Length: 132
Image 1 (cartoon, rainbow, N blue to C red):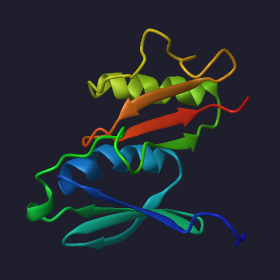
Image 2: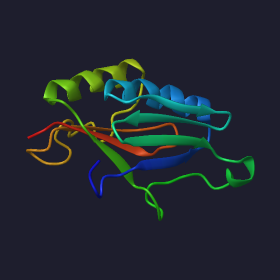
Image 3: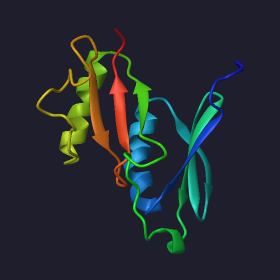
């Protein structure tokens, strides 16, 4: 284990079932595996790091998430290759999920930044980036 690597990220979500359906296939494609499961949460692990999804309590659902407010803006993951980015892009389209910045896809981050940008059910931006 290396000092400084992220141990885990915990995201509170508005609908746990919907979030697990969205994130499960993507994280498994990226090499994560189901790690923990309890009534109000699920986690997925890759090596020494994991991502946790927790159902937000009803009393805190009155203000929806927005990535432009204080807090998390997005999560970015490494892809294996440009072909991997393309394969995920195709799966997102098959699942009828919108590609952000589609007019500039796959170079929305710049000429040498090959990536796909999309949103989870709570509109958290997700980014999958090919190596240079």
